[in-house]
Image (cartoon, rainbow, N blue to C red; front, side, top):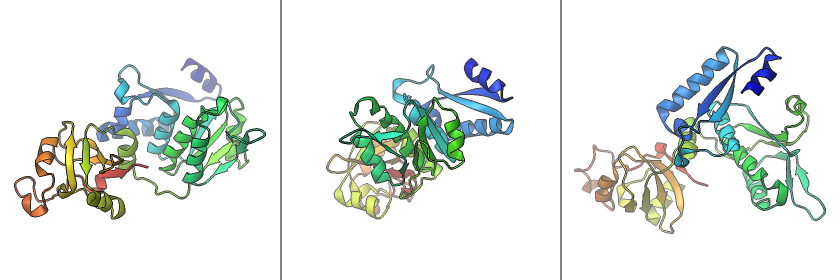
Length: 281
């Protein structure tokens, strides 16, 4: 922090450290508090320096990766740009002669293909975490640029329109609203619900809510309003969402049709409402 302060003092800028943990973004109230903190820092002209709060985060609720953390912060703050400063000039992919640099990526398919291709590609393997960060940020319509961090002027040159590094601006995905984004990336499931083929087709193709009739079994114990993972008959994790009932209640409801459920709920037969469910790629 002293290094940041000393550097930005020369530009008459004030810095302030913001410590976050994964659970801060996963909880709606704490998430709102964080956003208010950033908003007030910006209002007073303070540059926030974000770090993971290692003193309170356990292994289960840690980001553990600064690239992922930066992408999530950018997404939650509706940032226009995410600059990932690294020791590479941009993203390189293998070739028969020498690695080839990619200057622009506009589709999720190409991004994921490059992610897979450099899985064990020597010194460029560390770019995988940067590519994953770009994908996370893309779901909130954030443009990511991966550039050489040893040349600070690169940032200004990118903003002026010059082609430097690798610019990632994904255009073929559905951007997530904040509630979906928080559920997808900041809320870890604490239980599992297994569903039949009919229910899986309904929620994946028709974007329907999850009803008791399609549930096969429940694993782990959890209270109502918990985040749980949804698995199909092939043991594939296809979604996660917030349940309206506890695991005990859902276990009693499973397989029952709407007409058979009067004693279990207040009139809405949904175990997970469509608005509180996200699908996993």
